[in-house]
Length: 303
Image (cartoon, rainbow, N blue to C red; front, side):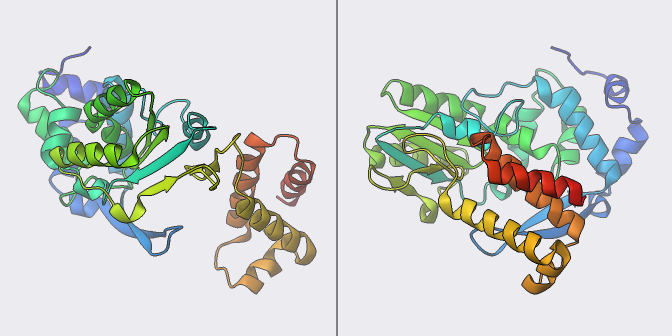
């Protein structure tokens, strides 16, 4: 593992001069803009999005520095080969599926946690720890729009994941975490798991989002990161039906007219890419779906 004691080493590996790094860190507000993204559950998610200069710095920090920090095997998001499908695969055919969510996850991450866990004293001198933490932190929160934030969340929750994972293994419970979504499956007492997770999260300054706690038992549709896991991996019927309906109207009226009819303000090109993404997502689980394969070919020709 590389140890950074001199600023010059950091300059060389990140590809930015010390003057530029400090100039940006001292004027962070000028390098972010706020935006909102609609949530599936309603409302909006506020994002702090860095400009091109800061984004480039954060990407280099992620690719050169954070990549070498330990990430738990139970973390299913923000790592090579991870996906919502891979996360769901661990929970197929289980007796009980328990889903827990961390309340205001990114906003609850403290500056000291980023500094201590992402940029520890064993690797970085104190001035470098401060500099790097400032470049990855903003307004008392971990900015959701920053490319460095996902990797930092996995690093911060490494010990939590390992502890919870070990506890679960001893009880034959399957545990995975996808960002702030934790899933437990098997034959167990959900109340016992909820109590443990609430207790351990509190030690880290996090709270459970009690309103999002879901216990899915046999006879109910069991879903994990949007994928049905009762007997095999499958896309929820509502999702498939809505996608097929969208494609039907696009082919019947034309994409532009369909967007006008629905009152959408996005461009036809953006909508086409969104539809293609949805089709490819479903085809990962049903690669022989003839209707969607034909729709994919039609969308490709439309582009």
